[in-house]
Image (cartoon, rainbow, N blue to C red):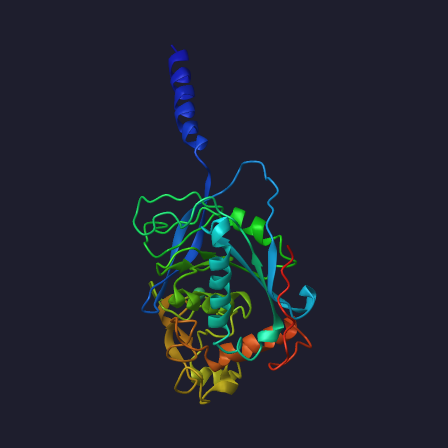
Length: 328
Ligand SMILES: [Zn+2]
């Protein structure tokens, strides 16, 4: 009677195998943003495309091109939920986002260090899934959806598809999805998303560039209590108090006591790096802790240096930009 358990084992495997017919997923950590500026993180499941990679085509519009991609920071916008007749709206959303970003230092004074590209991704239907309410479905090119991982304002996207379109631009140092929605929302990560029609969502982009350009750590302190790990490699968080920094001449010791653009003076404020205790941030409340804030002086100097390294010889503000060239 050994055959029976064997047979039943085969059935079990078949039963286990059947869910694999559904799209496989991978989990990634995404930053979740609130209109009040607070930031948290969530581990979400994103689909992985297994279908054959068809070539995608789309026009690429330079929003600004200040130099060769090899010596510029290239921002690439891809849009989702814009139909062929809504490309003008998409273009306006991209311009608005870039204008919002360049209100924030150091982007304001280093605007000419960036190339900005708009990939005209065309969707069959207008809008995004679960907008304005759960259950609403739209057939869009990048499969954007609110209520990602059960969080209303977390706007996820099929990253494989987004990256494939972004690759049409000459280079992509950061990919930014703008989705055709006015609902507040977005997500941080390699591919950052934001609602194109919501001005407040633009702050998400400024925070994300702190990571992708400056390699800055998050300065918010949720959800953990006591940090017991090693000294973080990032320049804007530390396990050292100001006294230890001064004594050992490490981390931001040379900045201690200096005024910072986000208010107050540089010190060591407990709570950062997802922990409430045992790790410090340089100021009370910078952009790496809450949206709608400036970078602190540490972050700002690091960002300036990183952008200058990436874009040597970029022109200073006041330089007249070449007119927009539409290459289609
Ligand atoms: Zn962050």
